[in-house]
Length: 330
Image (cartoon, rainbow, N blue to C red; front, side, top):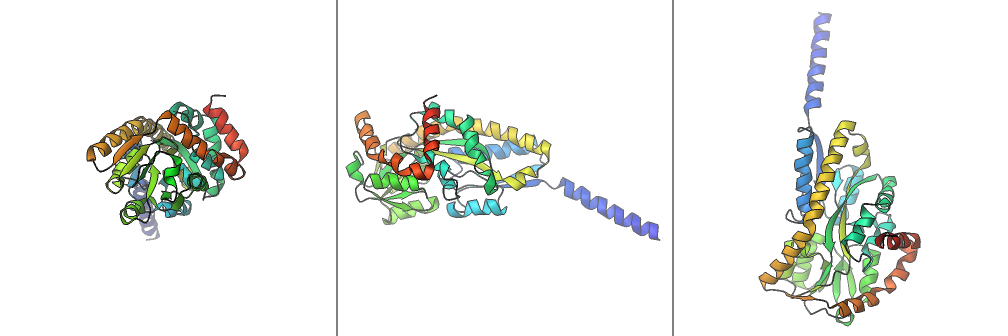
């Protein structure tokens, strides 16, 4: 009798273990933009590649458009383990206490994409990620979105045009200082709330990439857009460090491979998506699109240049110097 009971207990235990072993590892990947943006498409490509590479042992659930968490909530959710993966904009790490990342927000810091990639794919990119680990966060990849442009309900050709405008920003002291240098009033606001705020006049305008402006339909409630390329929006794909470190080594290796492939894809399509978005905004006919002349762009750069001195104590002079060296290939 005892033998039968023991046999039944062992059989049940093995059955339970077998069922547990077969259950896929779930990665909840939350982000705040639409599926048809570079980040949205990158997330879906990672899902496809990760599930294929692991033979279904990993299931990636993608939650776009703030359906799971808004900007301000998602980082805490990651640290608590309520979600495993995010791709926040680099501006989001300042409020987390890693102020060095706000160097990415500095106006006109990247002359071109090549300068940007010298930072993100080099030793400096790894140095930034190492700063996240004490917060329980691990950086996996840098994903591109592109250079930012300005929108408002009035033409924005000179720094004086910004005077008194309420401009939406992400929570970033650098971006706050940037708009104050232009005489505007920066307003911190969740990305998902911007369209309605523009529609109701709570804010007058914002800075963003063309793909974000178009997919969030901001061009429907903004009469003017200025192609300025004054700043950069990029993302860091991050995971809960404890979750990532606890994965079986072979699974982690396969996910690293899937992430590398998804990163190349996301970065390759970013410029294409932004170019298409500008064309679509022009075609919609609701927004006048203006491109700054080189002389006008230089006027903007000079107007925003005091931000560097103001932010030295926050971002770190060493960080800004390292960025300057890396962007100029030194």
